[in-house]
Amino acid sequence: MLYFCVIYTAILMKKKLFRSIRSKLILSFTLFFLITCIVAGTTFWFNSVKERIESIATTLTTINFKIQEIGALEKEFLIDETINPEFYATKKSIYLEHHQSLLREIKDELNKLKRAKDLQELEIQDEIQQLTNKLDSFERTFEQFVEVVLYRGFKDYGVEGEMRRYIHQIEQLPYAIDKVKLLMIRRHEKDFILRKEEKYIQKLSETIAELQKDASTKIKRKDILQEINNLLDNYQSSFFKLVQAEKTIGFDNKHGLRGELIRKTNDIETLIRVVNTDVLLQSKKIENRVNWVMAIVVMMAIFLNVALGIFITNALSRPVQSLSNSIHRIIQSDFDEKETIQPINTNDEIGKLYRDFSFMLKKVRESIQKISEQKARIEESQEQLTAGIRYAKTIQEAVLPNEEEFQQYFLDYFIIYRPQYLVSGDFYWLTRRKGTIFLAVADCTGHGVPGAFMSMIGNDLLNKIIIEQKNYEPAFILDALDIEIEEALQQQKSKNKDGMDIALCAIKRHENHQNHFDLLFTAARRSIFVVRSGELFELKGTKRMIGGGFHAEKPPFEVHHLTLQSGDLIYLFSDGLPDQNNAARQKFGMKRLTELILSIYKEPLSMQRDIILEELDAHQGTEKQRDDITMVAVKL
Image 1 (cartoon, rainbow, N blue to C red):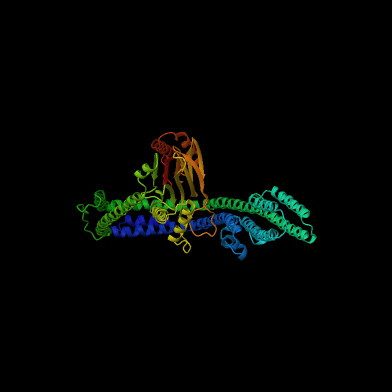
Image 2: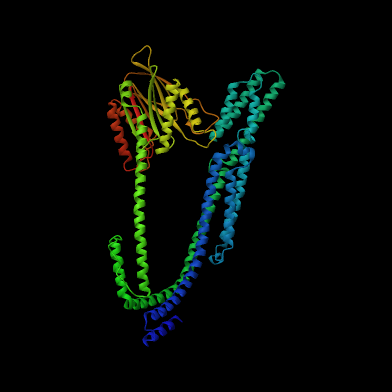
């Protein structure tokens, strides 16, 4: 039909029945519309089939992603909820709810696939059914896994709770029981729970037997001895139940229900990949069957387009060329007001195009003017913001200890202070009170402006605790700092978890030796290096953060005491330097920093600073700085 339409159009034009451009365009565009409809219809049909097949592939990909998400949820459940007493008390968990929600979504997706119009043609019905069966099997295994976890329990719940109640009854007995062996039983119990090694089962059983034997020699009353033996047997029985539950769960990801879940997840993912491959192969066959239809339609469309193009070029080239040249000049001049469009005084489509473009040009120039004005305002605002941050940097640097203080208190020193941005979340602090020099380096939560705010708060609180309140005991200072941070940020009420890591040194000249010094060191999650008589010591802080939200149980801050001599060195630093990575994603590292200090500690501290920075720059290369970097070294 299209062929006869084209022939008929050619005959009509030859007889000059359509002399005007408008009439010829109408006829040509009518034919063009017909071929476009045919192309569009064919394309729509082809795309409809292709999209349905792609939808099946997309659904399979979505299912695969959700299967992977389920695997991640299982890990999070095992890490978080198995040590969450609230889970055992309520039997409810956001991880389980999300897990069930994802399973429901996957089943809904599979049901959609079963109802898919093209599924039968793709010949993957059996594979989809296999996928459904494997998912049901996986769900049953996971439900069994949760049941065993609940049975095993934690702290006061389940088998572990039962076991602890027996051992607590034993511990509270007012009889002559060997407390050392009782502690060894608890130690073997904890070792098994932490390490999942069967040797601790035997050790616990042997220790219980020894304790029963020991009790039989010390306690003569049979009723008391029977009570102790019964409690020990009950405890051991509960422990064996816990061991069996752990075995059922799996000591690692290769055994037990954990291993079975992983294997079933891998089987599902493998089957999804197989189905996906089959879908792609089958869709390719369907695509080939319709390509020949598309080829014919496209060739006809090309023919008509060429004919129409030749006609339009011959009939309309001059005004179109004039308009095109005008547009080109305007664009080349970047829409300069001096450039104008060549007037086209016609009432046809080109004349309308000229008028529309003239109107559009006017609007574009107005928009350019507005954009230029907005750009100027934005640049002004950006400059003000940058100036504000620079001023904040000036304020932050102003509160840091100055060189005169370091020169007054120490034989030599160096300071490395490199904020990741203009302002820093690190800060260092120095003062002397009643003959004691207090030196600290802190790493606050965040970088840039948020970190800088925290650093200013930390600086002010140290001034308050040590200088104003006159507290000079290092552990008490950090405890007070922790309380002040929590109160300042209202962390008991809010969800704010900001805080800091800090290393604090209190240095005082020895009373009986002028060339000796007493160093008291305490820290929150930070270490320092001390070089004494050519030997490097690392003093580690307590694994506890300053601030970071309210926690009921916090370990006390440990205080290290060293006696140093004049000439010994102390290095304090944040984690920015050892954590800096290179292009290969390798950190600078504590080991490398230790070796570097041991190789240069005899050099003047200013030279040590230059060497450390050279090593850091060479390691970092073109990589971005990932954290604020601060390091302070002093020589006594």
